[in-house]
Image 1 (tube, rainbow, N blue to C red):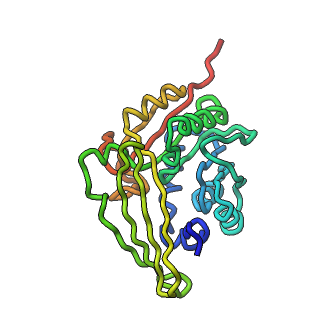
Image 2 (cartoon, rainbow, N blue to C red):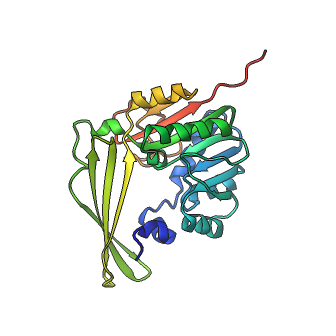
Length: 264
C-alpha cells in the first residue's frame, strides 16, 4: 500500500468520511447566499470534488483546485461539472476571477508557516472580485489551550471497503514550537498487508491571530465563530440556529470580505 492511503484511494476517503447529505456544501451555499456572493466559486483544496459538484449542480460556476492528482482524477470522473485543476493553495495563479473562495475541512491549515498563509491570502486577493468572500471552516487553535481530550490517546476506527476491513489508529499531539497539530495514523487490514503509517499536520491558528492576519491582507472579517457548522456536534442543518458568536469550540468558521469598489 501507499504511504498516503486515503489520497491514493479517493473511494476509500469518501467511505471513511461520508457526507451523503452534502452538509458541508449545503452549509457553504447557505453562507454564500446569506452574504449575497456571486455565482463564481473557487473550492481551494477540493479533494474528491463532492462539494464542488454539489455547488455546480446548484448553478454555480465552480473551479476546484487540489495538489493530489488521484483526487482530481476521481473528481473529474465521479463528480464532473466543475473545472478541476492541479494547484497548490499556498500559492496559485489560475488566470480568472471568482466571487468567493471556499476552503473547507481545515484545508487552510495546511499553510504551516506565516509565509505560506500569506501566500494563500495573497492568492485569494488576486483572484477575488471586489467585495468577494473568503469562506473557511477549520480546527480552532484556541480549543487546545488547556484541553487534552483530543490529544495523546489513540482512536481506532474500522471500515470495511471492497471486502477488506481496514483499521485506522489515529493519534494527535500538539507541537507547540511549530504551532502545529500533528497527526499520526496507522492503517492495518485483515488482508495481511504491511501496516501503513501516515503523518500530517495542521497549523494551529487562534481567532485573534486570524483576525490580524486577515486585516493585514486587506480582508474585513464578517463572521468568526465556532458553530454550528458542517463538522460540529450537533452539525449545522438547514433552518437551524444561526451562528452563536463564540469562538471556543473545536471548529472555527470564517467569513471575510474584500472591500468593494468605491465610486471616485
